[in-house]
Amino acid sequence: MEPPEVTVLVHRAARGDQTAWHAIVDEYAGMVWSVVRGFRLGDAQAADAVQTTWLRLIEHVAAIRDPERLPGWLRTTSRRVCLETIRASGREHPVAEHWEDARLASNPGADDGPESCSIRKDQQRLVRAALTALPERHQALLSLLVASPPVSYEEISEQLGMPIGSIGPTRARILARLREALAAQDLCDSALS
Image 1 (cartoon, one colour):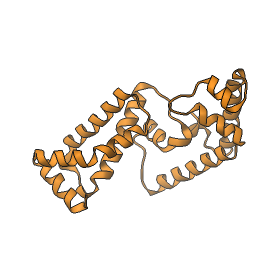
Image 2: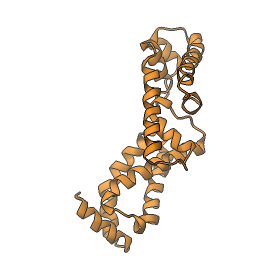
Image 3: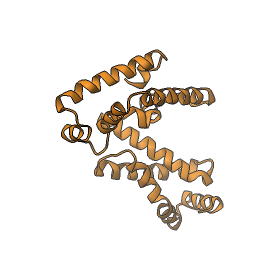
């Protein structure tokens, strides 16, 4: 859908035009579901996150400053709703894949100005560098430990050819190694907490 069409639909929806609402939902429902699925929520939580995203649009449609940016607004809102869901359920968030989202969840009032954005990008780069500096076997173990759906220790043992009893201690050593590497760069507290 072209930006001028989106703008017209948003303005019509803000005035209560049901046809416009249906067109918006038809156009962007797949995108919203795609964002939500990326957070690996359970079926019920995912459905709630999608519904909450649409509810937020209903509540704020008249206040959207740039209607042509509705897809971005929906993506951002979907992410925030998912983070709220994860935080409410107490679920851990994998550091390597969603470090920025975890930072936002733990510090929603953070300044998102250019300076903090630049600092955040540097931190992400350093964390990723620390992860890629690990031996491939350790990277593989960490990937399996944070996989979704979860991979059992039996499957990890079979895939990596390591005894089940050594998975936990090896994980602890790998995380200690990462903490040391990140502590040297003053990132340990924020990245691996």
